[in-house]
Length: 354
Ligand SMILES: Nc1ncnc2c1ncn2[C@@H]1O[C@H](COP(=O)(O)OP(=O)(O)OP(=O)(O)O)[C@@H](O)[C@H]1O
Ligand SMILES: [Mg+2]
Image (cartoon, rainbow, N blue to C red):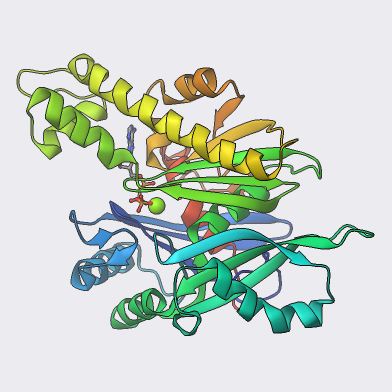
């Protein structure tokens, strides 16, 4: 389930089932490069996905079928991503031991660290660091509740799809980053992914995920803030947030409500970084790369850069992906890119990956 991306297997369609929309990405490997084969987005009604759980399976199936029909996608093997409170990713310290011993004791160790019964989760882990001569090693523990996995499998199979890989959104974002940027061994980068309902901060050193933390803050919070301040509907708030105007108000009127959430979000991101630093006091972060739909919010990137005192840039997971400009409008791809980082990260996975 975890496992870094390997080559040689069969290409999969990346299926990102987000709170606001289903996004699919298909890539084809040509030499060392990738080429974009399909890209599909279909909106979901509010409440279809709540905290990563599928509340309205029918809506998700319909969105998937709409994408498959519209784009005439033939691939049936997919990689899906899960997120939300059913996913626990935790760096832990373990006494230095051999990989075989670790495999045997991780179950017991995990029980101390995760809030679910061990028989209810699928467990995975990765050794982050085991410096020679030390008595402890750092291990990243990953636990995903079995019931959320089975929800995703059920919905996919009702849509006629076969789930070859279940990944975790934070890992997909990290994989997409690794494929798009030149990662140096010592560089520490914070990946900030801001979707409609969830914000994830992940910290990578040399492309390896060291730390990740979710909060239930995202694009929807901006709408709620605008609604409350201006007394408009949710849809009107969305229009204002995207820079449009509605009866009686322009985007400028919504700015104070947007600013409030920007500050709230930046505060939350700072807390995540503080958590990381409390475990790794020397933890300097060289830059931050932002993905998810909210990355496109005007003035969001400079605001973050200023309030976190960091170099912040917008992610482009398609940076190294070739795309036929007759099929895909380059301007659109550039615009939508940040929103595709989970989908791209999933599409990079191959059947036969762990
Ligand atoms: N240009 C834009 N400016 C501001 N916000 C935007 C823009 N484009 C999209 N968004 C917001 O981004 C959010 C959707 O992003 P994304 O598709 O990454 O989320 P999701 O995957 O559906 O949700 P989640 O990952 O939280 O479950 C919505 O809140 C949407 O309003
Ligand atoms: Mg998402």
